[in-house]
Length: 109
Image 1 (spheres, rainbow, N blue to C red):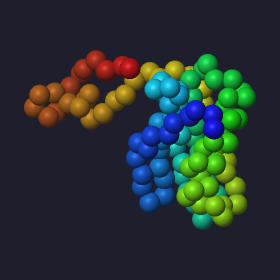
Image 2: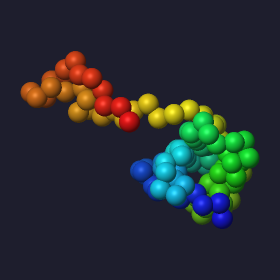
Image 3: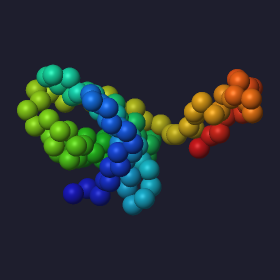
Image 4: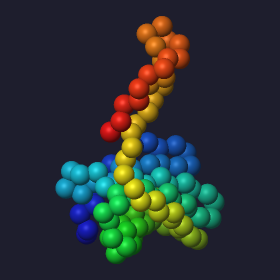
C-alpha cells in the first residue's frame, strides 16, 4: 500500500467525493461519478506530486474505491488537475447579518 488515506467527503446515489491525505497532509481530492458502464473521476492533486505518484494514486483509487463499488465496470477514466488550494466558499460567504447578499472578502485556505 502507498500510504494514501481516503476520507469520504460526500456521497450521492451516483457519485462520491474523497479527500486524499498522506501522513495527515491533504494532497488532493477525487470526485467519482458512476454510470451504467463506466466510472469517471476528476482528480485534483497538489503540484508537488510526480507522474509516478499520480499513477500510483490512480491505481490505489481504482483498487480501494472504484472496484469495491463496481467491480464489473467497463472503464475507469480519470481527468487529473494539479495546482494549489485557493479557498473554500459557502453561502455564508455571500450573506450579511440580515441574510441578504453582502460584499465580503472571501475566506481563503
